[in-house]
Amino acid sequence: MLYARNWMIACFSLVLVVVLAGCVPAVPSEPSEAPIDTSQYADRYSDELLTWAAGIRDAYGGTTLNMLGFAHPTLNAMKAITAEWEDLTGITVVYDETDLAKVRDKFVLDITSGANSYDLVMTAEVQAPEYWNLGYLEPLDAWLNDEMDVATEAWLDWDDLHPGYTMMFTSVQDGSRYAVPISGEVALLFYRTDIFDELDLTVPATYDEMLETAKFINDQGIVEDGRTVHGISFRGRPALGGGNWIWSIIVFPFGGQIVDLDDQVTPAVLAKKEGAVAAIAWETEIAKHGVPGIASFDPFDAINQYKQGFAAMSIEASVLSPGVLNPDESIVTDLTGFAPLPAGPNGSFNQTFAHGVAMTASGENKGAAYAFIQWMLGRANQDLLLENGGAPVRRSAMEDPANQEKWPYIEATLLGLDQAAAAYANRYFATPQVEWVLEYLNVWSVNVSRAIAEEISAEEAVENIQSGMDEILAQK
Image (cartoon, rainbow, N blue to C red; front, side, top):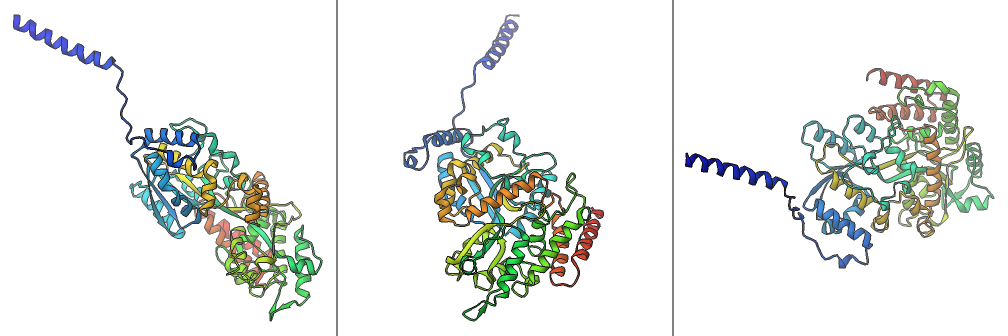
C-alpha cells in the first residue's frame, strides 16, 4: 500500500512539473546568425537601414533565397551589392540565371513538376499575367499594407515608382500588384538636332506634323558623306518586336482599341475600326518617306539606320538611347535630341514594356524574400543600383537634374511614362493581360508589316487582326 501511495505521489509530482513548465515563458531562441560589426558600412548606409538589417538578421539569418532571373543590367547591379546584403542580414541569395527566352519555360516547369525551387523570379510584363492567373506569383498587396510578417518600410516608397511601370505588373481585373519594376522602356522620338536647326524645323507635336516633317526632310535629298538621309526609320518586321510594336502604341492616340476595355480579353479592334485603320495607314504613309526596308526591320535595324546617319528621325524604345549616345556605335552622338511621342486625334498616349521582380506563391521564405525586395529595390538604395548600372524606374531618379544631365533621354522618358500612365488610366493596354498575348501580338505583327509593305490595305490588315484574334480566343 505504501509503495502504491509513493508511486502515485511521484506521478502527481511529475505531472505538476510538466504543467508548471508549460506556464514558464519560453527562453527566446538564439539568433540564427550572430551580430556583426557594421562600422565598415557606416558611410554607405544610414543608421536606420543598418538597424533594420540587424533586425532582419535576427529573424531570418541563415536563410537561403533562390532567385530565377535572366541576363539584365539591373540584375548585374543587384549582384554587385548582394555580398553586402548577405553580410548585413545573414541571408544568402543564389541566382539562377538563364536567357529571357528560356526563363518562362524553366519557371513553369519548376512549378508544375512540384519542385518549387524559387523564392523570387524575374518577369517581363508579357509573362506576368500568365503567372498570376495561374497562381504562381504572391500578391504583394498584403505585404505592402503591413498585413504580413515583415513591415513595409517608408524607404521602400512604392509611390515613387512610376505608375507607367507598376501598372504593367498590376492586374487590370482586381488591382492586385505582383512585381516591383526594375527596368522598362517607352517609345521615344529620336531626331537630328542639326538637321532640324538647319531646316528650321520644330519637334512635331502631332502625328500629322511628324508625317509632314518626314516627307519634307526626305524631299530635301540630303546626302552626307555619300549617305542619303531619309525622313524616318522604325521597325516593321512581320514577327514579334516588329510590326506589332508601334501599332499597339499609336492605335490609341488615333482613336482605336485592341480588346474590350472592360474585360480586357475579348478582341474589339472593329469596335473602333476607323482609329485602328488610321494608325496603320499612317505607318504605311510615313514609311514611304523613310529608309527603304522598314517592313523588314527589327528594333536594332531601325535604330542602327538612325545611328549610322541614314534617317533624320526614328521612333524607337528609350532603352536603346545609350547606344545612340555611344560614339563607338553611333555617328550622331552629339547630334541627337529626344522627345516624347506626339499626339493623335484622341490624345497623347504611350505604352511601357517592363521587367520586374516578383515573389513566388510557392516559396517557403516569403518574409526573407520581401525583406530582400525592400532592400534591393527600395528608394533608400536606388543610388547604389544606379551606380552599378541599374535602370532608373523611380520619379525621384528621373527628376534629378544630375541624372537628366547624365542621361539626356531621361526627361523625355519621364514624359513618355506620363503618357503611358494616362493610357492605363483609360484602360488602354498594348499587351492585353491574357496568357496567350504573344499569339495576339504575332497576328498584329504580320498584318501591320504586310500593310507597310503595301501587300494589303490598312483596312484589310485591321479585319485580319480582328479575325485572327477571334480564332485564337475561340481555341482557349
